Each structure stands twice: as structure tokens, then as C-alpha cells.
Image 1 (cartoon, one colour):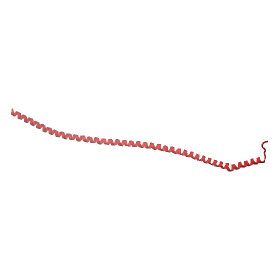
Image 2: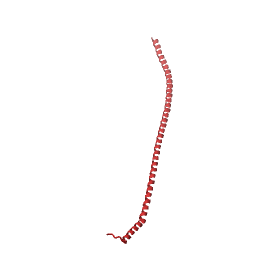
Image 3: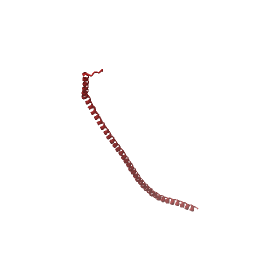
Length: 148
């Protein structure tokens, strides 16, 4: 046999196993614990991040709904204000029309009164003129009749 089992080989195997055991105690287990604790930390932070993302999405939806409601309310307020302004405008226009019609009627009445006064004056002047014309014509006839 090529490989002889002797005490050196056994001692070498035992020292190798002790070396592996010591290596496991000093390096692999602490590194494994650190890796495991970091894995737990990362998993915990990932779960927190997921939870915070979910909470943020819920808050975002809530804010979107609030904005939507605020826009709807503002649209209603604008419509109401527009209707009130239109109503006020119509009221003012109708009041103005009433005032203008009243002033127009008063002006027509005033013009009619002035027309009557002017017509009375004209009638007096027409009467005076007709009397003058009649007197002139009659006066001319008298002179014509007396000269013939």
C-alpha cells in the first residue's frame, strides 16, 4: 500500500480537526452570528420599509381624496358665486330698467305739458294773427268799397 497509516498521519489528521474546530470557534461562528444578525436587521428594516411604504401610500390616497373633495367644493362655491353674481346683475338691470322707464314716462309727461303750453300760446298767437289778418282784409275791403 502506498499510504501508510502511522502516528504522523493520525497526528496530522487530529491537528487538522483541532485546527478546523478552533477556526470554527474563532472565525466561522462569530462571522456567522454577525451575518445572521445583519440578515435579521436587514429583514427587519425591509419589513419596516414595506410598512412605511404602505402607510405612505395610504396617506397619499387620503391626500388625493382630500384634494379631490376640495376641488369639488371649490367648484360648487364658484358656481354658487357665479349664480349669485348673475342674480345680482339681473336685479340691478331690472331696477335700472324700472328707473329708466319711470324717468322716460316723467319726461314724456313733461314734454306733453310743455307741448300743451306751447299749443296754447300758439293758439293765442294764431288768434291774434287771424284777427290782424281779418282786420287788415276787412279794412282793405272798406277802403276798396268806399273808393268805388
